Image (tube, rainbow, N blue to C red):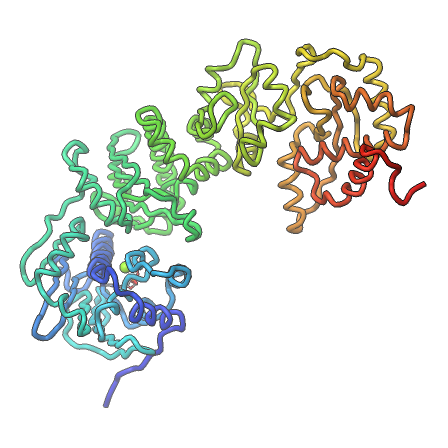
Length: 621
Ligand code: ADP
Ligand code: MG
């Protein structure tokens, strides 16, 4: 009587396998890394179970990973004495999309002309890399739960797999690969040894190949920073970070108070979120005296530091703590505070030590720092010191810190000014900028649509208010070039007439003291609202948010020729003057980026052009 069960793979898994089997030809050797990494995970889980005092099957069996090759038979076997899998776990883990990563990986493969096999482990589907080289995969597994039994899982990569009981298995898992004809080289011991040395030197368990011990197990984070070679750090990073590049930054430190911590943290070269892979998950593993408490520990760092990878080891953690209660423990919060503070200090040091490298880091990771300013109140001030912006005082492409800005402030300047604009060119041409230029006040140029929002949250820096340029109270009316300007009285008169003419389109019209070369600007009547925020609110309203009522004030430049002539023309030709007034307002809206449909004003503009060219408006008497 056969007890063999036949199972189907879930559709996504089948799709994944199809790609793995038929399209991935390069870097096939990474299957070794993936299977060893699974074996190591299984050993970590067993060690955790053991440390927390729960019963295990065959407690005397030491934690090891053994690999055997059989060249004549064309097989390679990766065996571990780890946690093993029950029947249910085999079904769940090797055949269903237990990991959201499956879909993400499929998407990446679909978008990529040349799918990168190296990425497979990052998506939590590493097991299936076995099918790059094997025509048949057999998994023999005996769970560490004493009351369980052994199982044999077999698949040839087609529609499904078979599952049947297997007697007399030792604790743990053996993965037997029957190699494809073109992958027989992986049945050679030397080949496997080379690959293990390349990818798996930092596995925290002994690895044996055909009975010979390969690695020396060492918790690199527990050693003195001075004793560790750069190359070892890089390899360790490649291992914990599932990355094939070198890390961008590395922080290795230990502390005794307020908590005993040993940490080795890495910043990857690239911000994976910009690669379109969606939100990254923190990849920092939490250990207590070298026993893994939780991989990809949640809550160890604030969300905005989710790009970090590495290891944190703290002796102060109770070993028998459950992973669930761990998440909201006061201890974890304390750990979080200490680690975050230390990492921020590290970044500040790096910014001083090597500004060019920091600038590259900033280009890649600024969004995370800004997210921190907005969401992480306790660290807001420190994060403010890490921000960098282009500035009117520096050449294009160079960025300044807020501290440097403050150090350049002339005696009369009390606030830090910034201007949100789509580009440097737009910022420099902005009517909101010209007054600052005349006063020789520096203005930070903000190009990231988040920036103004970030500044709003930061609020002050070194006790100096952060002020949007358009909201600054700036007086340049004494600047040269004022000959021929309207008198104060005439200007006030004109403002009054403009308000009457424009009616509800503006809340108030007033004479500006801050304009130099532009005829007029609009300013939001709400003191706390800027034109950028208006644009954001409008976009939100299009997405269904309640539209917020908009009212603007018009500020006019009494020195500008248009206004001077308009003051005369409003008596001589009131109809024309009214058109000019409307156009003046629309032009100010364009400059503020708030005129969404310019078509309406085109007709008026055309009429005005006709007038300039000397004719009566077409079609009118
Ligand atoms: P990941 O390791 O990222 O979770 P994999 O595709 O490599 O993704 O493995 C899927 C799951 O299968 C693992 O999470 C684990 O639960 C299980 N698994 C794989 N190999 C082993 C093993 N050697 N021992 C125990 N469980 C394993
Ligand atoms: Mg894995």
